[in-house]
Image 1 (tube, rainbow, N blue to C red):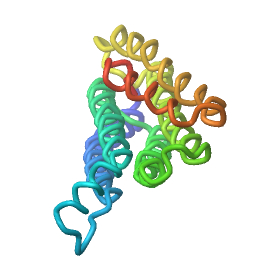
Image 2: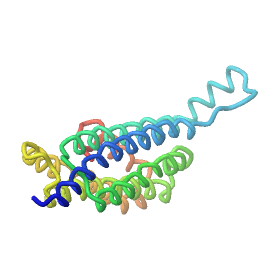
Image 3: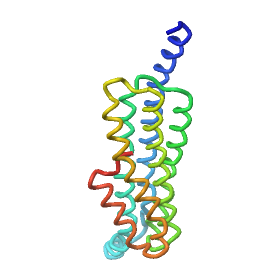
Image 4: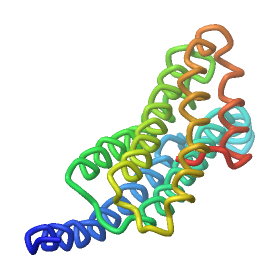
Length: 200
């Protein structure tokens, strides 16, 4: 390997640490913002407050659903980036686009909590999470094709890639259902998140 190539690889390797640190910060902010989607009433007595909490269960459902989604995104991102030996500029850009959609999740979460029976809010949530899932899959596939993985991680990355196909299919595939059975569509996502198949 030429000296220039070696220096370039070292530079990319150092950028990997910065990219992971930045990504972790974005995940932390996104998952913290979720709680802001839950309304806090003022001036209620005990009975009114109890009625409010019971009636606002969709907000809590949306919160825990998105917490599970972003949490699994982070776990998978952590594992996939731990297998890299270096990073290149194109992967940095794709990762930024991916994080942009992760940061966007609190917005459709807020809509879903307030309008859980709306086709628009359900479809938007499915679209945002589905695109994020697809971008995560693209990153793993790209790292394999470009040889950015440590040699021992190739088999694990291939297995991750196969598992990650499920989430974008389910979320993006559920968009049409959002216009037919919007109230029931989110339960499909919840099952996907809980049973461990949301590996993005």
